[in-house]
Image (cartoon, one colour):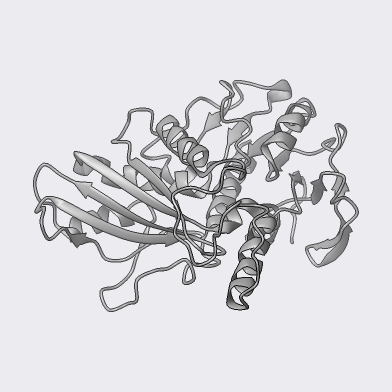
Length: 343
């Protein structure tokens, strides 16, 4: 990773999580101008050998003095770890970019989706909170990015209502979720008893509206959080989508279906043009529709061509997919890039 003179020091707290690893990789892929990237995690993961920019390094323990000298700190671990440590990062003078959800309730937190800033400006001016001019940012998760992007694209078309159904992968529960789906799949195919440690229910080969009673947090809580965050970002500036969240037996990537209804029929080409205007990639008519597999490693939202509803002339259906780790990491890095460009 090439770093210009005066480039900031960057820290990733939660570097051993799937999201932390994706963020580190994308920082390198985008040649982010960092003088140093410090990898931090809870003590159980500290000491793990890894690499940054092709050079060997260790994951360091996440402690109160871990943020000295850092200008940017990303939190990609658990909300508990982030809540315990982000104030120390801010006191050290770092801008905090939180991907864990820990700061979403903070009144001083800035909500911004850089790709949508022309439609939805940030929630407040930068530098309005925090010590030493540091700011606190909410980096929205992928389902919120999908919901807000659709709302932004459709805003000028004045939909009467928008409904969004999201299909969540098990990687939203990090590596343990991946491993449980993998072991359940192998066990079911071998007619063996399945493990239910993470989800407390069979997630392999199953579409679900809820996990087992012992699974924490419940899927309903996650759905409520997505709806709440989407509403907070939109702040009444566009029609807020109705949101449903379902489990799909997928390792990575969100798939989603959305329905928009207008006062009168709107041409599919007009809807697609509006979506393209906020950075959504629309498949060609003769292309295969996007899937959670086809979007792996992509930093944008992908959609199939818009389809009119066969029974409701003013209704339109959208089918799309996004890489849940890459899209969230890319959004967080765009926030950081805006901060680095500031004088």
